[in-house]
Image (cartoon, one colour):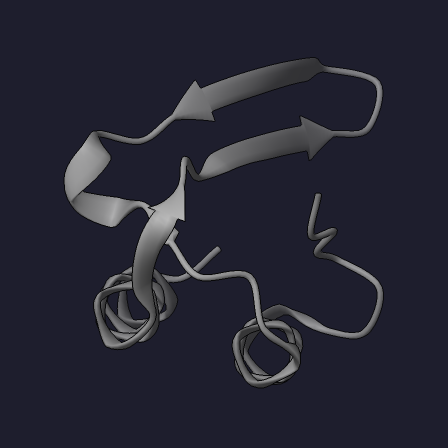
Length: 66
């Protein structure tokens, strides 16, 4: 993950404010797995547009909306 991707993700999340808490799962193969639960400030409205923007940043099938 590059620093500019994190900044862009922040912008995307703030463009889709809603009631659903945002969880980020980081996986480094053969090393570690981490789950981050972001503050309520980054709660989102789970839309197809949000999913598309996140996939444009990090690749297809990297995000799940529940």
